[in-house]
Length: 180
Image (cartoon, rainbow, N blue to C red; front, side):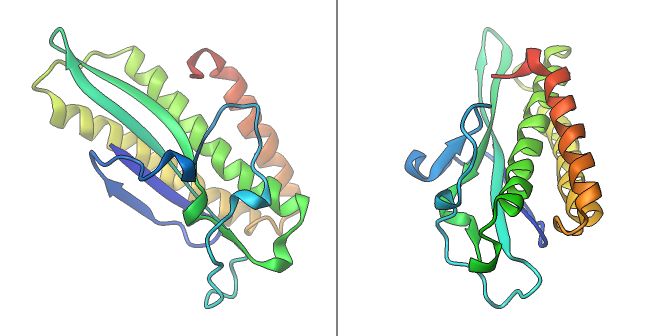
């Protein structure tokens, strides 16, 4: 399963079930060590969208199969270089931190999925139930990404930006046991 979301401004959720990431060369997997840099934003900026200065394309991949009658999965948060872009006027550390937090929110929801699914067991033949369960959690992820942009006014509200930064870092820390 591949689900992706684009951050800052125009958030769109693509439900590309059972697809794979096109090329690992264009992908950065969230690891908690490496931070995004503007050189990772390789797509051409959308100049026709005036109110958006950068766009982060991130998602969650689920590698799934059956083993001994149980559905097995592995969720990974990823960033797509060739789908993410920045306009020249946004090349600041402040705007980059906003985009990084979109990626961090994606990792947070990968951890939430790992935690929730660690408490459940889906048997082979229950793939539809598994997909519905995952989709419901990813709907929350989509809403969180959208709320982040709304509340921070796409990073323009510096007070909200700081609050979101601390909240997401705290939630990631609380779910450290579910990091990959």
